[in-house]
Amino acid sequence: VEMKLYPNYPNPFNPSTNIRFDIPADGMVSVSIYDILGRKVNTLVNGYLKSGSYQLDYHPHGMASGIYICVLKTNSNIQKRKIVFLK
Image 1 (cartoon, one colour):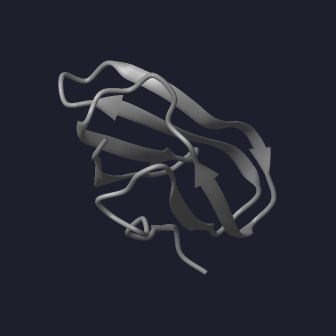
Image 2 (cartoon, helix red, strand yellow):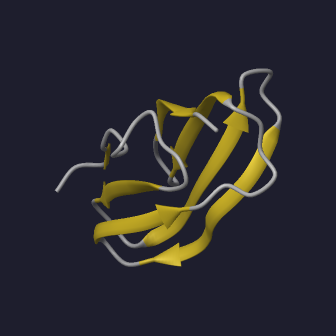
């Protein structure tokens, strides 16, 4: 298994979207959402996970419509995907 952040579905989304990712090794993992200016707006995961496949349902609250970046970080890698929220 290699690290992979899949495209969210649906995208654009309202009211929620599904975020899937794979991690190849046990370790610290974070999944965060950033606005287009690079400010963190949500942290979905921040902790120790075992290797494997994961799926999150993301329900943004109080966010404006727009383009956001989903960032998956592990000890050894970072992957990013553009997500679009439409109210």
